[in-house]
Length: 211
Image (cartoon, rainbow, N blue to C red; front, side, top):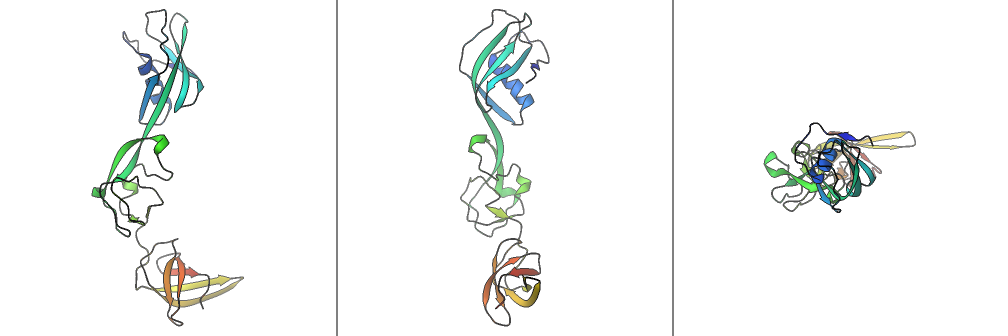
């Protein structure tokens, strides 16, 4: 990696701050914590003019080289932790409840503890529906919420069956609120049989068997 050149000469400095500044400029996380694992020190009293990652991983344990104007290079071992924003819910949310701006807040979390599909901003969650009952202060993920209901309980829909070029439609009655892509219970208005069907839009559901 190309050495990071310090923007200005400083009279006082620390290896932690130099490495931290380098990481904040070259990596995407809003917060980084650097813990030195070695106590190396240069022979010169001048401020450094560059730093680069020599080996290791970020976040994790890594070795950095800090460069000085006299040509001296000093290696520093460090443990690096990175933090990013996630969205938590302020209060418990009940399955089917619509999430409002007052229900959520952002918090910095160690990226190693961020679950897959976590939201990074409140606006990604506001207006969506909780698909599970969610305890307070839980990190919200794509698996816990969905778009607002596209299908309402009691609504009339077209039940669509397609197989090997055959296309059959029938009138159905939705038995529970639902959203596109998630199966819901739908009653065939003719046979009165209730089946699972997947909404494809606000008026049509796709079923495997119309009987």
